[in-house]
Amino acid sequence: MEPDSPALRRAERRYQIEVQRNLTWNFSAHLFHGMLGQTGFRLINAPTFLPAYIMLLSGGSEFIVGLALSLQAFGMMLTPMLGANLIESRKRVLPLGFLIGGLMRTTILLIALAGLCLTGEATLIALLICLTLLGAFQGMQGVIFNFLMSKVIPVSKRGRLTGLRNFLAGITSAIVAWLGGTYLIGENPTAAGYSWTFLVAFVLTTIGLLMLLAVREPEPPTVKLKQSLKQRFGDIPQLLRDDPAFTRYFLARSLATMGRMSMPFYILYAGQSIGLTGATLGVVTFAFTISGTISNLFWGAIADRRGFRDTFLMSIALWITSTLVLMLADGYLITVLVFVGVGASVQGFQNASMNLTLEFGDREDLPVRIALANMASEVAGTIGPLLGGLLAAFWHYEAVFIASVAFLAVGGVVVRIYVPEPRLRGSIKRDRI
Image (cartoon, rainbow, N blue to C red):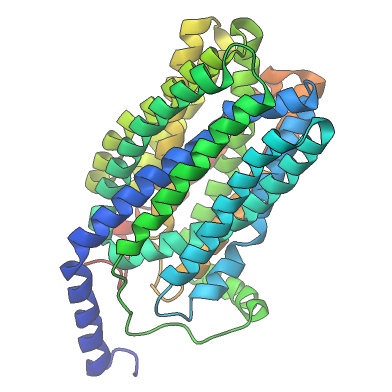
């Protein structure tokens, strides 16, 4: 069909009518998928259990902690464009989502089994390999599932979906984290205790993936012609030139993502004064997740009312404040409060980053924009933890936190000054209903 032809306009209207007809069903499916899936993944990605587990396996090496999380981000950096190339010429992307999602969950199962079946250095090596593979599958899944959401959930409803989904996921993950820390890891943490916790994460994420069986995915009237991965990489410069606001945004997002370097070191720094028992990890992880839970309702409401750009900026401000408080005070209560602030800010940052990417440009180029933004962020995510590990090893944790605050601040300033609110500039062309 010719661009802007009457036939294409009629096909587009039919597509939007189908989206609206199935909205309640698809909203519910995404809600329960996110609730159960995120519950499991938060046990893996929370800045508590995994850093403490790696610290245990490595014999107390901050560098290995940074290296492990850097390898996960490295995997996430490599594959977003591959994910985009696999789906952009498909009218239905959900089958591929099941394949990649299943492989991603398999790596979590292998992480759990490594701690139960292997010993010593072999467990650590297996964990590093599995984290790299987990990151690679995450990189593709992030593109596939975000694009799927953009097809079936109008932009005006995404704030409340992500807010409610993360709210429910936060409640369940906070409870599971507390139970896992208290009863599975216990007062004397072992590899087996952490492994049973990660096995619970595998079960929850797998059930979450099955919820997507209920999704009714519409077929859009147009899709990109099939191109090679090399050709799509060649199209990137033109895409960036065509939308300078998006270019500035994804660069600023990458800078702010460097602030993630501090994440695994919050608990290690606090552990010097409060200890790293299973009960402590459970309580701190509970605080981290429950704060993200409650804050998601506010972030979602703010995003629907004022846009995700304001959510992005406010979450960065809260993240910086929480980090500074941790540096200036110590004690059990302060640590819990800091993780409350960090949990809320990280959820706001992640939700805003993901959804802002969906609000630039045309729908046909959306997979590539998602991939490009995610890939650039994970370049920072790869460098950040490794740099953080080196700073912690040579200059201690305060140096990590200062560098993190600096990157967050610069990224926030760039968005504040140079990136206009996408909803006000009319950059959503055929995605909004």
